[in-house]
Length: 87
Image (tube, rainbow, N blue to C red; front, side, top):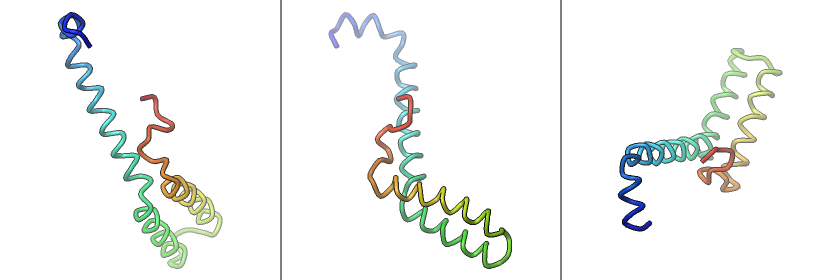
């Protein structure tokens, strides 16, 4: 950007800075959400809940499908790229 545009946009600097922070937080949250190690740990906990009788087979299958979808996205490298976000 040129000097004149920087001077003219100076009043909007806090808004631009806030938007950058929000993008960074969202990116990190997506990275953690799709982290394969975290998803595998959740799958192990889910299996323990099934074996303990806390959930039934139908609930297990539904939650397992969601976790496997997350794992597939995480292993595919799509996490943290902004896919599915408005940024």
